Image (cartoon, rainbow, N blue to C red; front, top):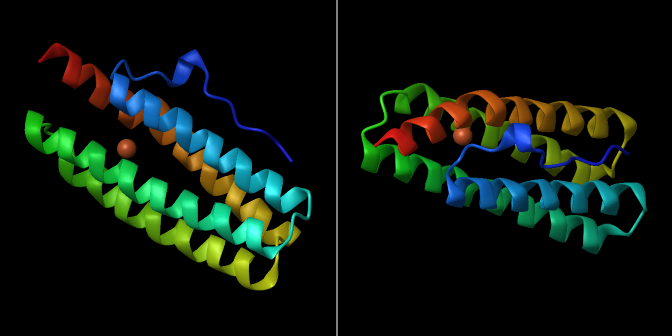
Length: 133
Ligand SMILES: [Fe+2]
């Protein structure tokens, strides 16, 4: 299972956002580990719960920062967040229910890639905007 890494390329320049992205990637890696090492349901479900909660919390922090700063791209960014959270919930619920099948792990990996590319484009735009204010 591939391990995700927080690279310089993903830095937005906003300390809070970057810190949370780091922790987010850690949470993803923990889930991947729990899935691949067959750590058992309890450990897997805990990491699933943590990841979903963390994503929700982090997205709402970003949205608060956007609101406070008058970020012009807030609507599409929030729409992306909403859809992302929903799909993450669905994929992880299936993993929790039926175990980490190859198909669902593939979907999870794909969904994580979507987040990484969101960070490296949209969140970087947000970071640049916050820094110019
Ligand atoms: Fe975002």
